[in-house]
Length: 248
Image (cartoon, rainbow, N blue to C red; front, top):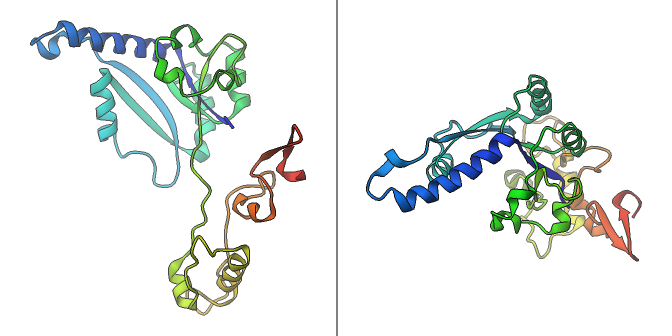
């Protein structure tokens, strides 16, 4: 499911067009004149949320340098702690100085700005970039975008849900590490109970938890535990209808 939208302003759209054409023209026409024939680098400001540990330490990161050199741009990434991301984004929006590129996880916020005319329609230019156009199906491009217009580029969250376990706690309690072929919901329960009741950190205090999970009441926190009971993560199709996880 497409749940995240990357949106571009007019400035970024123009930057991509100029830098791509400029790089190609320079490569065929400059000969041995080197960098002096290259068009001036176009600065692109990007605002991205970061979690614990922050983003890349500076804008001299090898990936940024590669992008700068390949597309003749000056990419500047502003990392904002996720907890304050939308607060800062709204403050910047109120000042009228939105970044050229930003990631928006909130469909309502995205649609609000679409209605206000904040973003440039990308559809007339999309055909010039077939690789970009191929990242999603036409019906997926249409999600959250008005008919015959494209203001945001859909991106997929491809990471799989995974359960991590404290091996040092398993070793402390003499519990063997389960294998993928044998791991069951009963083993999960036994480990969680042992971690809660048997003092796995060895400090003599009743201060450990069996397991923890991210999420809230609407997401039910831990989809890894749903599958053993036949529950789909989010929605499932049954007899031609979509059924939410809460009522499956």
